[in-house]
Image (cartoon, rainbow, N blue to C red; front, side, top):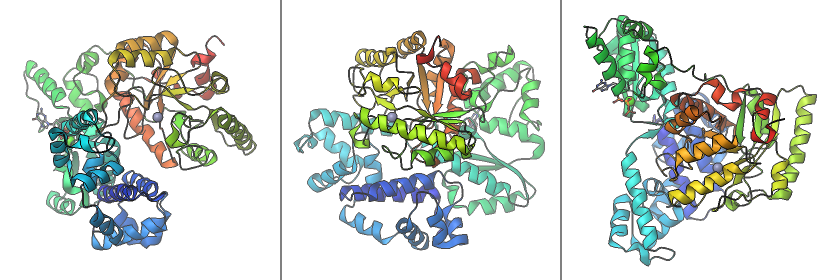
Length: 556
Ligand code: DGT
Ligand code: CA
Ligand code: ZN
């Protein structure tokens, strides 16, 4: 059997999804994408699941059907699968790196291959520079410029992985290495521990009674490609953990502080805990998410550190999708899954008509959804299930800042979210005006994923964020931290600006299936990186108190 990592399997399935889309297969692309996401978010390696339970166990995983389970079984046996090879033979291109460029989808990749024999990013870049793309139907000088920009952005973000893809791997490694009999503990340090939105590599620290044996075992793990492992003496644990948690700039500042006190600080210091180390420097303990040299040392010294929102502080989720639009599960399934995770409320925020590709709702469809939610809430109540489903939507913001759903539909919601899904290229002035217009709408309570960025794919829209934040403050409009792994939007710096300005924030999973709720942790991590406290995040409140903080209920 091949011990392929979950990341690698997810990559291959993602590529298969794109290859199917090129063939205009109707359902397969979504199914393979869904499976890839489920696998990426999984801690237990599939080869283990398979070794213990066979193909039957793979089929049990939510998001993986019988067909895909069989492909994975073949993949684990041979390192590839026939269907993938067949598709790849037809279109032998590096589809993964090509579709990673903003604006390039599988269909475009197919055209590029058929008409220009473009196989990879370098060839695409050369063609865009040479001006040969504009000869293709639907292409022009503008699209060449856009593609060059997209490629430049990809190169800039380089090989960094998104936190949402790394965190399950890091946790799995902590558990696996931690379970070796000779190992006392194993912890992921570095940017993973700081919950940074993208990660260069995973730094694992372990205390072991038999370091050589441990290192030998670790070298055999399939995840090893981008891992650094260090064995630590227990008496230096605090010093080493602190050093390898970083950030580099934070370390350097601590070191200078120690020098001023006349002693040397390094990773060999005799501190068994980080608390001891900070205390010795005359500082209060600083949470890893704050260690970026953005004022945390001064705050610690002056006892002004924020009392950060905790990872268990959310009472509800304010953004989730169902099969009414592009989610994969019914409202009821999403609701019950949310309750199983301990949430007390969940807002159903399906898309609206402007986003046609998701099957977005019009006013009539929304009115029907309201009926379903009312009935479901009754049903949950009779079963004494402590969960309330809130009526909402992710209303599309049009180019001019107006909305694609009528006000009387918005008025029937518990709250409305609005967000940008198009016209990313507007000037700063136009984009700012557009966002502020949505913020000022009396029935828009929350702006979802305000900067519309996609990690490693699309930069944030250009807007004057201090103006946007001031408008949110003035209008009592909440700004969201969308926790979806590919978004994390608002990002940490903007979150900090909101906190400083006293703008209320929300955290939404943007889940499209129950698996998606896992993302909430990522959102909380970013909130912490933005110095947010519990009081800054509206959905740390129980449902009634949360609702009265929203704009439409002001003064009630
Ligand atoms: P990454 O992996 O690029 O996402 O970011 P980090 O922060 O995990 O950085 P990494 O993996 O290069 O190193 C882990 C930590 O080790 C880093 O946060 C601080 C510490 N470190 C590494 N190299 C240096 C260095 O040259 N000077 C200092 N002061 N600390 C270092
Ligand atoms: Ca690292
Ligand atoms: Zn959206």
